[in-house]
Length: 186
Image (cartoon, one colour):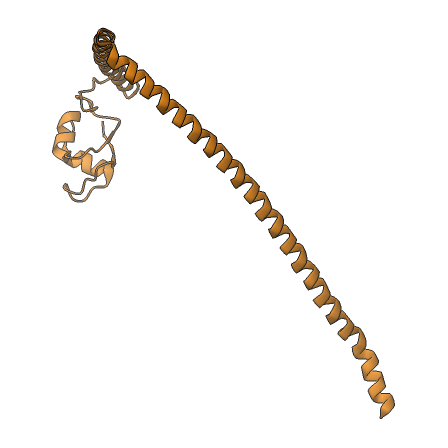
């Protein structure tokens, strides 16, 4: 019996020893993770300290800028003629800016017109109205906009409502959605 028990203990010894090693390995891994976490925290703390220092420098610069502006304001209010000249210059700049914006709007409209013309040429040569629709002839595609109706689209492209519905698999005439792409039959 003693021999039998001794044999079992000899067989269990490596398993028990392996369990201890596993526990020891686990503790080693946990220590390594803790050290890595501590290193990451120190790194983040260093970065935050750097950011704090940068913010403090920015704050000091802003205070200096405010002081400079206050001094300039004090000088400007003391020289009334200088203020009047600056206001006149500002008014002139605003007028030029408004003229530039108006010219820019005109250029944008011109660009839209040129692009619309080129798009219509690409899509089959029929002229395009201001809504981006071909005026006649059919063929091509159309993206539905808010307020569009099948009858309006069919009329703009010179096709029948039923042909438009059939080409697009539309069962109900009032089932249009804004953004929906329609095939315009020829």
